[in-house]
Length: 400
Image (cartoon, rainbow, N blue to C red):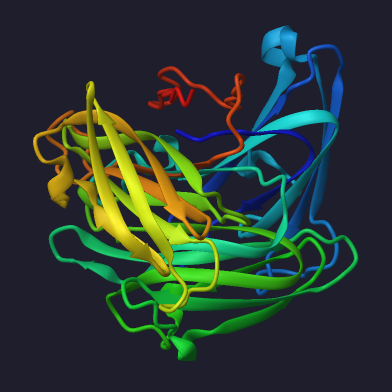
């Protein structure tokens, strides 16, 4: 489930797919929803090249569409594939800025859709979804990054970080530092820097750097002298349909002492969840959040897991935790910490493909909801029902 970013007049979207992940015909789907119930809303969508893929510093294409008021139904949204934007070249990799008169919500799908793959074992359908970012930051916490992490049975995962400069006039000088899970040690040799022109994007490929060892997985902290937005895509090797996982999540600019996890899978058919919790602060073994408490809720039962301290990031497979043994199905969690704010991401995937039949390789990742953003109104910018094989599930957590 993706929690839509709403009440924004400008949103940044990181588009495109790089050849290091797959050489097939990747595309991006963009969905923009007018949230104003009383006014038509003129939305302008401007596309920019990523560094190293085309000329930066000027728009590649500009599109404009007027959306009907939210109460008008179908005409109040704008759905498009980048393949259908004639001004974009076939090899486009980059980002976009959506600007509107009134509040909008957006989401972005990076995908190999069924019409391009045939969903064959050697060319499976793959999709990852992220939200349009409305709150740029000079620091981003990235819970999960990796280089060829895995094994022959589950496949080998790589990741890349895409960061977009949101300044219209200033170059963003960006640095990314990588940290081991567990001992919190920085992989100093892997530090990367980039000077990103206005509105352009830079992509840091963990799978292509020699500075990270094969099999490595950890977290990253990105700093910038200009406000930026960013996210991570991580993906399996797609050597067969059960290894087709492609996951996306947005970077966190801030954390909270309490965070909410509305969906966890624990043997829901063949679906299982993984959870990564990260301290939103210095990644230092000497400065730790204390008493990180995860309270799980499954089918009327409550279980508690306590991490005595969290100095960087901790990542674990839910089914392997002794605190949840005997539980199953779908559940939720609330995570609290003392001393430091925290952030978290949740993965859910199906690595077997037996229950439901044919679901092997399907996966999703979302960011835990920060305390302080609780609301009585949620916006889901895109909902589908058996559309080209895709259907939407909605899960709502009561935090009252």
